[in-house]
Image 1 (cartoon, rainbow, N blue to C red):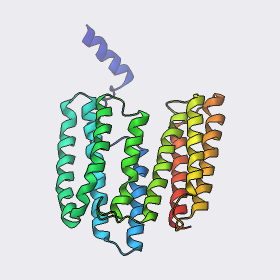
Image 2 (image 1 turned 60 degrees about the vertical axis):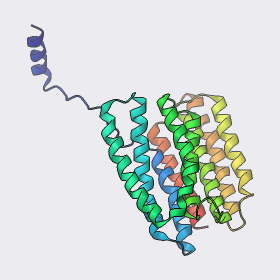
Image 3 (image 1 turned 180 degrees about the vertical axis):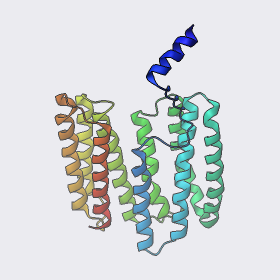
Image 4 (image 1 turned 90 degrees about the vertical axis):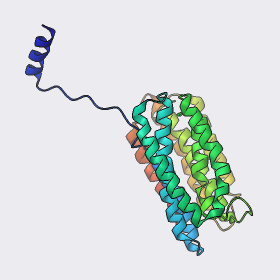
Length: 274
């Protein structure tokens, strides 16, 4: 009787929709991470090319960097799920690909191995937070932003020692960290922590601090332009939450994403053109 009733209902309403398969970890769904992956590398790569550096190893690092992120994402999902088998094929495939190309990269630039001493603790911390299902926490955001922001340092170096990184490259990494961590705070005020005055204050203060620190950047960088950029970001960090969640209006993830796209483009214009 139950089956007959179900068939009759299906006949009236049409074919039932197939159930969506759960994620298997192959494609990252953290859309905000793409800019954080690409922008620091682009800024570091441009500096390398402008100063006659090794473009080939920098290009190979981009591939390893992306594969490493795919491995990190799949592993995070695997840990969060408490080792559900459906995630392991992605973990295994991406890990093997990252290891193979990573060895090729170290064959080209063996001195870069020392950066693993810096990246490994950050990745370990982020994976541990994923295991604890706190991958959306502020600490997790800080660790992933720190890792991404150090990519220009790797591209512009001969390893951790001897220290060969130009002051301008250090400045680029600091600006990337200031912007992308500010983005973590700002987006929280619109989505997960919307309506919280405390998060808005923290976001605004962070961007104001970046304005002040912009004047401490190396003289070869456009300090006034960077300070002006962060000043605009500070105004945005106050104005958008005030107009939106703090006034009872919703700012959708799509709207926030479009705003981040424009801000990221402006940052690249400041650092690459001015």
